[in-house]
Length: 79
Length: 79
Image 1 (spheres, each protein chain N blue to C red):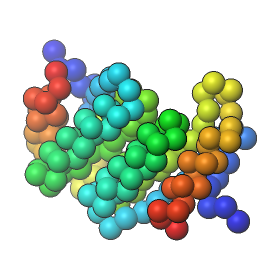
Image 2: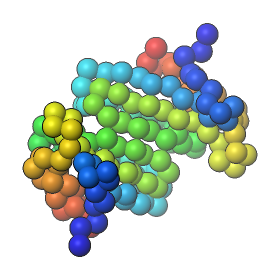
Image 3: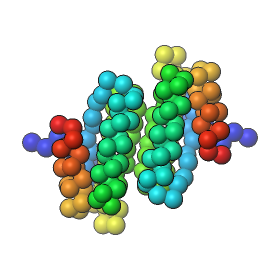
């Protein structure tokens, strides 16, 4: 089962937890690097020990293949 | 007048805009460095060309001097 939630049938969301803010920020930068590679950018919500990633394709108002590709690449760096 | 909004009488919030995701992420990292220096960490909401910063002191359920110090240091890097 995927660890990503489908929100309102149009967005992928997953929460990752960390030991502190700095570790969360390091992970957020890894996700940002994937986003640049793919040319597809999530929303990132960073707080103490937590990063919430939201993937959505604005152009179609829902989910596209790009969202699932970025999700899979994020999963590959942090299970 | 301060560019920070006071939300619900207990949180400072300010939105910064950028030309793309990468520039927003660079700014978020500068904010994270200030947070580490001060030992006081905001919530960061990063999306394409936008960073929203929220400052709040959990221990007192509202605003403390630390919030205003971090806000001022953030202002110093991006007016």
